[in-house]
Length: 152
Image: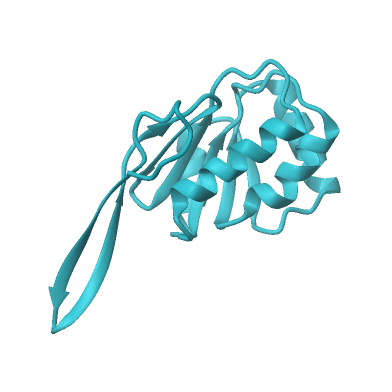
């Protein structure tokens, strides 16, 4: 278990070694983890990232959230389903930070938000702050998963 935030309920499971054709393959198993601001898990090759209720997302919190996710990923790239419905409001510096640094170790990002105003704001923001990885906004989890399947 990796030391870190006290809020964590789980982090990274044991690394297993498989021997195939006299080569060692490292298989890392990811399990559900939860901290003050988010819930994360990997399933079917996708990283699910769910924001917990955050009344106002500031830059300091955004940096902590990205840091926790990167620690969880352990240098492994994933397509990410990012459910932003927990964020009620945010400051511009936090949005700017997430638009760039929030894509680190991401193959692609599907933002899930079924709130009309939020979807419009996400789309506007994405047009004006070109993300460094393919990124789209979806109102259903099924559509988001379909989009991310191409990036597994």
